Length: 463
Image 1: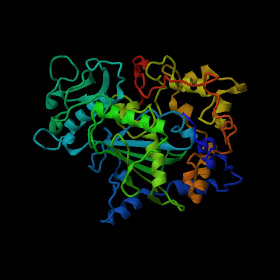
Image 2: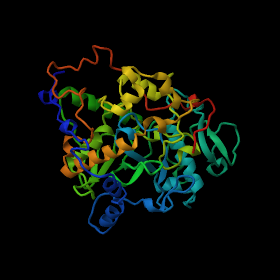
Image 3: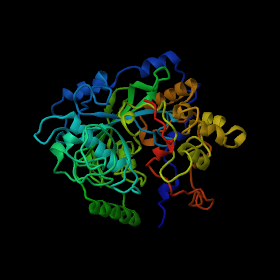
Image 4: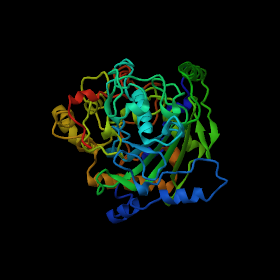
């Protein structure tokens, strides 16, 4: 297939801007004061005061927090997910912290009589988790998913496969044919969410004085909702259409608008808010929305176009606000070695650009990967994932400064990655039509979103 001439030039020009302390002279006190300001509540208040606003109005009150089971105290139905961050981009050492919440429609939160039931809601969330987070290699009758205690007697379905109904099971062994309670008429489909599923994803600065490192100030607020349910046949047709469109050289098109978000071919509506020049959250432009839709449409590694739930920490420890402390570096499904170790071996650096000098100096002393050091945060080691992917205080503050400088320019169309210096391993222009990755054996096709939590060998993820 012929290559577009425009694609031979790297248009993500923000990568090549110098953003060191000399060029972004903000004091530590200024940076910390800024990232501890609340720009989310003003967004909620501003949109709530606009009855003519057609998009989603943020309805989670972060100030009220979450209870011990991860449910929002405000009664909104949101539940926090604690998950293993996706590789590189979502590691704090590369610039941002993130958190994700999920919410199912009202029918999934009630019993068969329509009465709100948190126990029924927990069962339905566990069923969704089993449909998404367990690798397809496991049979529907042998899932073996560790779950927070569930009441089968209320659900009226045998989930652990022992032939009886119990009030506090901790393993979901069998995937039922349908959801339970008010959603009992809705079929369960492997690798697909039910219609109406919602996700709330916030992207934040690095606050080195807060244990989970999540700042109060948000870089972005991202919301997505599954507006239609497509059966597996319709999903396959959508992927076939995408391949045909690429072969014909057609650009992707999406329904929607910046005010309501854009809808992809798999019926996910994505809407985003991003900082304006003074740090207030604003509606994204259509071009900025396309940045979000790109990752949730065209990446083959996702599960039903999503990332976080497939990487949730199993059991009760995974229904918490995001925190990588105490989390082991388990392998991807089908891999023998820890995920971080596999990544560092293949990329030869701590980010896609091999520009994270702190990771390079730490894990590649003398230019070679110190595998024994990396394995310290694997199951059985004396460290955890936080030890491996949290930056130093100095780097965290520098990354915050760099992103603040980008916010001031409002040039997100030129890229949102903020490096501290222009990368030396990134092509500005491709002159020969290829990157030589395939020719040098650097293309890998065995990456998986699912994780092998069994590699913990019976150990418990810290809560």
